[in-house]
Length: 329
Image (cartoon, rainbow, N blue to C red; front, side):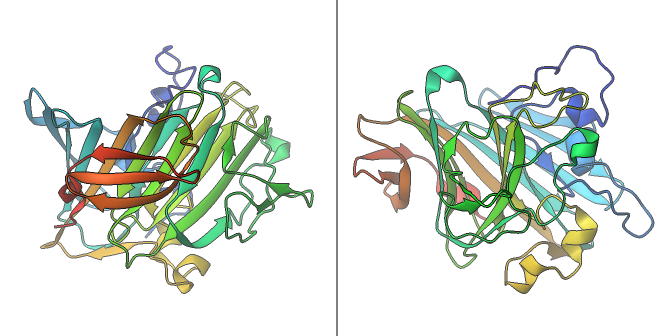
């Protein structure tokens, strides 16, 4: 997992989430949130990513925390745990007391270290893929992006660039000096969706498992030195954000609640809750060794005691995991 180069150096970076930017964090509402909602301007990625959490309970293999949010008003209870004999980190966030529409998601970030070699990025079959349709970075402010804004695509291996060429987003690190953002959406009718990065030279694969009915899309943030303004200062490199969300890209709550091109294509960008409803958002991250010849994950199938990962080249690897953690109730 990635740790930002300035994290913990004592600088008064704002918002608070940037001071300790690392690993994975839960966002509610997900996104930049620059557009006010009912007259209120929210923090980027919401209070859950910036505020304090209270200890509820813990054991040798788990911890439960809670936080109350002011707007949207409600409570989030977070449980993180591991199971003996499994190479998995489980997370569950239970949302309760909320009324109205919510966008939310996870914000995992992977570090692509030179000793790992080139990473192979893949996801479960998608029904929609698009480059961020807005101005993701502004050269006048010292930010640079390489992809064609709003371009649609069907494969990470062939994504239109702004200069008319084609980028292969399934191989990373690449496009040094640029920040790029795309979103792919899984079929919400499927019981399981996944995002994976295989490091054949490193001999392992990282995989995230989710329920697409709860987390509809995956935002992929390729951060490779394209931000020259503070605190990034062109030193945030070889990082891939794998952000499992229900939202309209990283715009924020206002744009996720409004009708938008993503929702018009049948992909949920928010979930509506009542105060008497609760929603459980489950997520599993795992890291497993792969055999020689395992190039990139092409399929994930359920099996007794977990899942089986099949590579494009043919070799497979089993992952022991408890998929019931992804149940939404």
